[in-house]
Image (cartoon, rainbow, N blue to C red):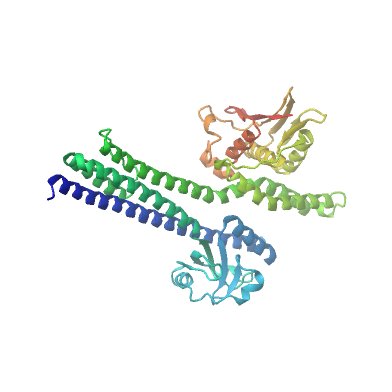
Length: 482
C-alpha cells in the first residue's frame, strides 16, 4: 500500500525530473541556437569584409597572384573557407582546394546559399561537405558585378564563406554534458529531500519552476535564494552553479568572438606606421627623387623593405590579438637602442615634415645596448610617435630621449600637443578609450594603440608612465633592461 509520503515523494521526483530535463533541454537548445546565429552573423561580416578587400585590391591595382595569396593568408589565419563564384555558379577561387583542382569542382549554381543570395542578396546553409568531409555552415553574399568589371575577377557574382561546425559542436556537447551531469545530481538530491520534507519541498519547487521560466526566457542571471543549509538549499545552490557555469561558458565564447571581431581593427592600426613610411618614400620618389641617382635606389630599397615587413606583420598581429589570454610571444635580444631610434626617427621624419614638425633625438653619442624585442618595440614606440605627430601642432618639436642608468635605460617621448587632463590619465591605456572622441576620429586611429603599447612594455618587465599638462604637452616613458 502506497503511503502519502511515497505518493508525494514519487510526485516530486517526477516533477523534479520534468523541471530539470526542461531546464537542460531549454539551455541546450538556446545555447546551440545562440552559437549558430552568432556564427552566421560572423560569417556575414567576414563575407562583406572580403568583398570590400577585393574592391580595395582593385582600387590599388593589385595583381591576381597577390590577391589570391592575400585570400589564402586570410583563410589560413581565420580558419574560414573562402569561395569566389561567378554568376553562373562556376568556382573562381577556393581556399581549401588546390588551384589545379578548382576547374574540376561541381557547379555551385544550385547550392542553397547561392540560390538564396541570388534572390535576396544573402543566403546560408548547413550541410556536409564532400570535398572536406566535415559539416560546414555556409554564408553567400551577392556582389555588385559592375564594380568588378575589368578587374582581376570580372565575372565575380558571389562571395561565399564557410567554417567547420566541429568547434561549435564540441563546445555545445561539453556544455550539454555539464548541464545533464548537474541535472543528475539535482535529481539525486531531490529524491533524498522528498522522503523527509515532502511538505516543505513544494515552495522550493515553485521557485525552481519560476527560475526555469526565467532561464527559458534568456535570463541566465537568475539565482535561486538559498534559505537553508539542508538538501533543499543544496539543490538551489546546484541549480545556481549549473546556470552560472553555462553563463560563464557563454561569456567566454562572447569574449573569443570579440577578440576575433577586433582583429581587423588591430590590423588596420598596427599597419599604419609602416604604411606611412612606405608612402613617404614613394611620394618622395614621385616628387622627383626617382630621377636622382644619388637617392633613388636607396629609397626604392627602403620602400621594398617596408612592404616586406607589412607581409610579416600579419602573423605578428595574431600574437598581439592573444594578449587577453597571455599568449603573446616575444623575441628578446641585445641591440643598440641609439642606432635603432635613429632608424625609427628616419622612417617617421617624412610624416612629421608634412606639418613642419621636427623629431629630435636627445641621447648619448655612444652605443647603448638594451635587451628587448625590436619588432614589438617598433610597434609600441611607433604608436606613441604616431600620436605625437597627429596631435601636436604644426611646427612643433617632438623629443625622443634616452638616459642610461645603472641597470636600465630610460626612454621617453615628449610632445607639445594639447595635453591630457588629469581625470583622463588613468584610462588612456584602456582599449578604445578616447580623450577627445571627435578629434580622435578626425585624425584616425582605432583606439587600440596605447593599449597594445602598454602590454608590450609590460612584457618587457617594465611599466609605462605618462605625464601631461593641458596646453603644454605629454610625455610617455618606460625603462628597458641593459
